[in-house]
Length: 343
Image 1 (tube, rainbow, N blue to C red):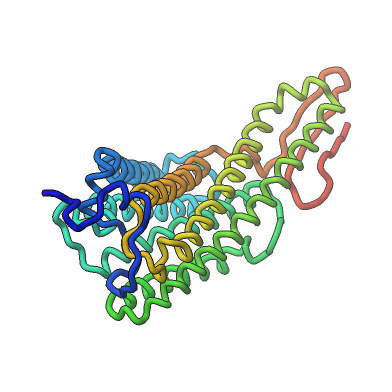
Image 2 (tube, helix red, strand yellow; image 1 turned 45 degrees about the horizontal axis):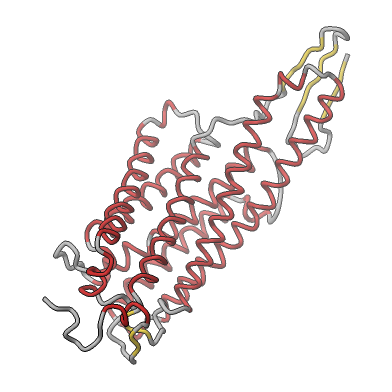
């Protein structure tokens, strides 16, 4: 079949997106027959590769839940279960979406109901932000610090926001698929995700930097008392700062996800764009970048929640041989007294 019979060749299609007023599509997508011919193997690598990777993330979270009794993870057990359950849902829905009918391309001859396609795609976002908010809570609980807005450290408040987010997504995705004139609900849904995600990321960056600075200050004071302490506490210090740095990286990924989401909402790929069929290669590059950042963010959360607690709530006792002194350290407490020395 000659895909150029419509009067425009592939090179022209690649350079300039097709524009025309239409209400046929909620969001613009490429002209699939032409686009698949241009992409070749790149398209297969995208939907199969990301589908498998998201599936592996779901399997990892499932194993973490199955072996929860033997866990050595980060934070309290209920938070550990909740975070892995959210990551399981996130990975599973993304995998099904990509492997069953990626971007409604009818790749496998499967035509999902519109409401199911939108729900499979949209439900992943509250899973991502919810797991992010809970790992932030676990992080602050383990380090015994009160940083940033107190509401973000209140489990009841976070659970309320999480439930509201899921309700908004479910209502917006199903309603807009049944009645296209209600597609403004999708804007509300996407705006909620962006604002909530940016708030969490900013708070996480602030608290992560505070934790790293506090740990550094504690160990500098320890080293001033006893030089040998440097080696004895190196493992605890590296474990604490490791989790803090991982979560900082997760926060920057969260900002990137919000930025990409904002661009997808107001840019050429948004539902109110006049572009019906965007250029194939830029579209694929954007979607690949989006999926990659989502996957990286979810993987860093999964990695963080599996880390052993580097900061213990009990005091660590270090004995100096020469002076026979006991130094009790509470590195990250709220009292403001970081080091206590008693003879």
